[in-house]
Length: 304
Length: 297
Image (tube, rainbow over all chains, first blue to last red; front, side):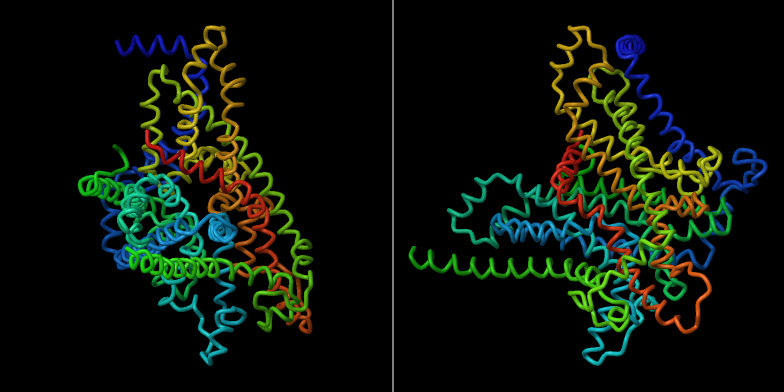
């Protein structure tokens, strides 16, 4: 029956199936073969024998990694950086959206929206460069400002204590306007009748935000939070790597940058694959777990 | 009643003033660093090095921009990035339509299986090294294709395209065209693509901006500096501080240093201008694109 349906569908739409061949091959080659290549984590990679010819070594790479003194530091750095980013950007984006939603259409509203949205389109390299320039002990405007109050110049990027704050707040600077747009769309979807009846009942603006707007954007907020928490260990390589220098490495080395260094700079392919696989599995488990909890608690999840 | 009518708007008005204050703070925090960079880029090297520039150019000069456009690395990177962006976007959009459109047709058996296979790649990936090995054995290392092929399709864009095709192209249109003897490909080319132009524009811009802004693939796949995209050149100059100047006369070291500092500001402006120029025109469509993608199903 199913086979028959497929055959009939194929006869009718064979050109469309043909159209999918190239993209599907692409998914097979660049997404699914790498997944099968991940068996490298359990092998001792030998360039001549290739991935499948190399000898199995079981869990040895994982045991070595877990026993490595850097292990807990990597997990801690990755975890803290992500949690801090979510904790800082999530409420600010909602605050910006609620604020924009309160004021009437006009030049000011458009300007705030345009300007706060713009940094999202700037590349990571440029944002990191700007951060380094602004915070530079020799040229930076921040140290100029501190100097005005008699504070001696601080080498912000050379001190590991500042790394997380720099990472997170430059991220907030770049993405808050973009994230707010998503909440603004959710806010515009709220039935105006709810606001009107709340107003007739004498609710103040603040009360309407609490009892109409916030519940209205809850489903959106939950989905965004689920995605954010689910990606907590997947925090991007790009920015952390650029902000890194030998002085702040104790706080700035995260799993992604460690994989890059082990695999491509030290050419230890098996170990790097093992660390990457460990990270992917943790992510998948986290995403599924958070989604399950969110569905239980709020009824909203990624799949419904 | 009277008391209430007077008192409540007043608390509301105070609240509204707070809202305006809050938004002004948001505006200033985002705008001031940008102003500082732009103002510095139009100042003289001496003014920048002595830290006299705030939010307006001091000793207006274009020497920073001069230095940017005289640097062969930067010019080459700019041209490379243009190539990667144009070719990459064309490849990506074509591939995205080719996979998304068939999956939008309700009578196509197997489309849900295909969609599940594609969505799964969002949840789980092989990782950096396994992907690197594929690119290596495909012979793409250190070629221009390394920046175009491995990132050709974005799952998010496929979701956006499929959702748009499903909601914007009525099923009746398909049936009518079939009665007229119009095949699937002809229908896609002469009906669906013209109807989907706004969505295609959004998806193309998403790909273009991602391609223009990315440096990671170039970092891992390319060794030949002649192939480097602008962002990697930027990283070498701005973050690693390698300007690649020749032998330096001791007496002009100071001047060189000042010009190298200024060049960074101008370079940031030059690299971001293409994206920031088109952004006001596309922001609205971008938002719509995000919303289409957010619709589940």
